[in-house]
Structure formats: structure tokens, C-alpha cells
Amino acid sequence: MEINWTVLTYVVVGLFILNGFFRGWWKEAISTVFLVILVFFLQQPGVAQTFTDIINNILNAIWGILPSGLVELFRSILENVLGVRTAANGAIQADPGNGTTWLIFLILFMAVASLIGRSSLPYGPGNGFAVRPIGSILGGLVGGLNGLIIINLVREYLDGRNLPGSSGTLPTEITMAGQGGARVASSGISVQATQVPDFTILDSFLPWIIIIGGLLIFWAALTNRIGISSKDGFRKVDYREPFGYRKY
Image (spheres, rainbow, N blue to C red):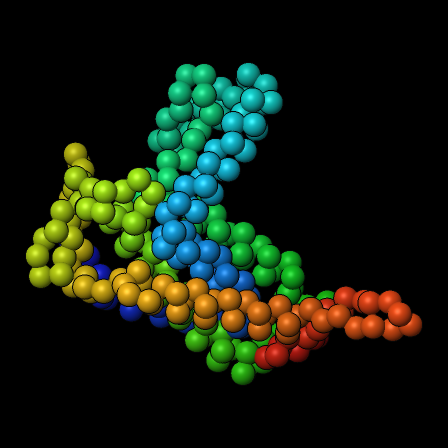
């Protein structure tokens, strides 16, 4: 099976532009922050290793306090439903050198970002906020950026060359197919990506531009939503109506 990576990129970016148009720039900015963290992890494998170590320690602690019956239930679900195997007497552990681990982190990060956006800036009558045209336009721009980052993160995770403990070469199950392509093979299926660009988000100083740009977007989102006022010697946190939104 062949996948045109360039066409896939256009589709993903287009969907995120459309999504950002309806959500507005502020909610897309929250997603940008989490994506920038993942880009930073790719740029700094040592930090990524530390992050996964912390996650594994938390998983070990949770696994240790669960009743044995619940442990067996979770193990059965992980193995039979998700295909994740655990040691007989051990908790599920995240492998920082495995691209699948980071794909799961990507999904979880986006889910958390969506929950934060919905809870911090609800939509609908009452206490909700409606997106104004300028907010939709900016949302489309930030959403397109998010889609571009995501598709590049997926490519990096499939390559695996910048993950912690990586040798800097393609894994054995991924081989270059020539003419800007890559082939992923397994015992039952072979997927070939064609028209894959030569550059990635980790080329040269590009990741730092993305990181700095993401931090600026986060700063804009923070200052547009939260303000601090002083009255009678006391400081009060005020929640503002972000630019490009209006309260119902």
C-alpha cells in the first residue's frame, strides 16, 4: 500500500485549519503549547528520557497500589484489546526509544489540550464564548501550524532516529524506498510513503523557531485570558474575554 506523504500533509493541515476556524485561535494555542513540548523532547533526547522515567515511576506506583484482581483486568485489556504486553509481575512501562510510545503521548497530549481548552473557554450560551470572525481567521492560521507540526512529529516517530537511545539510523522495519520515499514493513502488511520531503522539523535551527514561536503564542493566550489587578493593596486575578471572542 502506498501513501503520498505530500497529499497526506495537505489533508491534515487542511483539516486542522478548518478545525481552528471553528474553535478560534485561543483553543488552538493551548494545543500548540503541548506540541512544542513534544518538539523540544525530540530536540533534547535526554529530557525526553527523563520525562518517560517519571511517567514509568508513576505507573509503577499506581500499579503497586491496585488490587490484584484489578491488575489482572487491566493486563487482560492491555493485551487483548490494545496488544500491549506487560511482565508477569510488572507494570506497563513506556519505552522512550519506541515511536509507538510517543504516538500515544501525542494522542494523550492532544486530548489534554482539548479538555483544557473546553474547560477554560467554554462554548455556548450562559458562561460560554462565541468565536468572532477575526478569532476564526487567527484560529485557522494557528490550527494549520498545529497540523504541520503533528504530521512532522508522526514522521519523526516513524523514523525513530531522534528518540532516546536511537542510533541515528532508520529502524530495521523502516527502509528507504528511494525518490523521497520510505517503506514500513511488518509480517502482515507493507506500507510505502512516497513524496516524502527531504527536510524535517529538526533541520538546522527550525525546531528552535517552532519552540520560540509556540512560547510566544502561549504568552499571547495567557495574557489575553488572565490578568492581575490591584485594589486596596490586594491583587486579584481577572479572567478576560480573549481577543477574537465574545461572551454570550
